[in-house]
Amino acid sequence: MNRSHRITEKHPRGPKSIIVLLPLYVFCFVLFPCGPGFTAQEEIAKFMDAFSDYKQKHKEAVTKRASASLNEDGHNLLRALRDAKGGLDAVLSSQPYLNYLKTQGGKAYEDFPTYFDEMPIPSLKSKRKLEFAEFFPPQVTPQEIQHCVVFYFKLRKLFTKEPDILDKNINKLMAFQLEHFNAPLMKQYSKEEMRSKLSLIMQLSMVPPVLAHQETQVYHAAWRKHLETHGKHEGLLRCAITCPEEFALTRSFFENAEALEKWIAEPLKEKSDRKEKQNTK
Image (cartoon, rainbow, N blue to C red; front, side, top):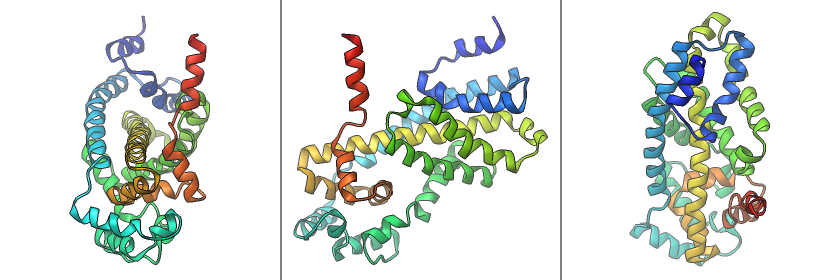
């Protein structure tokens, strides 16, 4: 039994956590034929243990935020928006909601499309930077954190458009990570720098995919519950009031509001789940 296998047995992980790391292992073996050393593997294993705890706490925090009840101001805004005419984009372009966005972010917007066209806005990027900086080790540079933030938002779009990619198209996910995370790093560092940073880079590579996938799932579940509990119209308004930045970010991934509404209303992995049930019969 080789030492790499012993690390795997000592620190078991579910298939999705391992899948996220595969592109980096491929990358490392291409760049360094000998692959990551034993010390690097130990560091990565310890990081995965710490990240597992962080991921659970992060999920609880995001779930609480996405499922929060409306306060008095939120209910007042909801009552005002109920009477607005038109589709979702038009309703959210009414003055009450635009005033609400200004109180949230301090910036005035002409209409709702102007708001979501700017996604991800600076405040949303800053929040992600702070979250990553809080968890990453001190030696991670601001440039490396920025690289993770850019990659994270690309992944949010990918997981929204292809929610079953982890189960049905791993090769595409690996290619996506190699293109958008690994390749840019190769341009920033020399081979010697890459070798010295190998363990750290592999750690950085795991956080954006796992959190992006987790948050996509959490927000979808909370928003779908709003629709099931309050009906489509009021449910969507509650989503937009409770999490305006996240809702606008997700809206920016779709050509129109109708596509967003359909995405929220339907189970994320209905087709995959149906296929799995058929295979077990």
